[in-house]
Length: 194
Picture 1 (cartoon, rainbow, N blue to C red):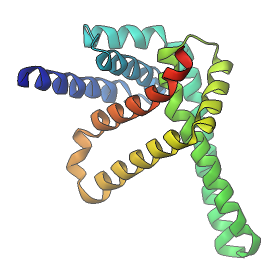
Picture 2 (cartoon, helix red, strand yellow; picture 1 turned 120 degrees about the vertical axis):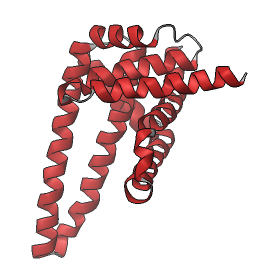
Picture 3 (cartoon, helix red, strand yellow; picture 1 turned 90 degrees about the vertical axis):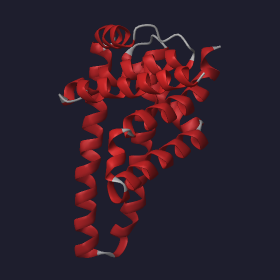
């Protein structure tokens, strides 16, 4: 029992190392995240098999679609980042009604992060065209606002604790957040599998 539990923890940690190493070139983040989600889902169901082989096979299989979607999402996040800087300059220089842009920016950021939360696990679960994946993930993220927002808050809290209070936690952060995200998102996506 104890050895089995330690083995599961080790394989989750090992998988998170595979994911981090596979994400080093930024262009591979999409495919690596899809493969990570796929293997974590298999682990959750008790069907993990060969972790390394399954991870790289899934990464290869989903490379094109995952990379394209990652490129789109990365572009959206970069635009939102530059918009936040622009809004900050407007607010600091002119104040007034420009303060109204701040909540709009944060709302758009939460929408983008919410979609990003679902998209790679959706690809790992369903076979759809790219446009359909993006549309469905947006609709799922906004329709299931409670789980989406809760998962984003948990992610944000872990990131804040890690980078402000316990930097050593970064070694296990992908493992912890990966498991939390797959568990929360899978609970929502299960409703669409039927």
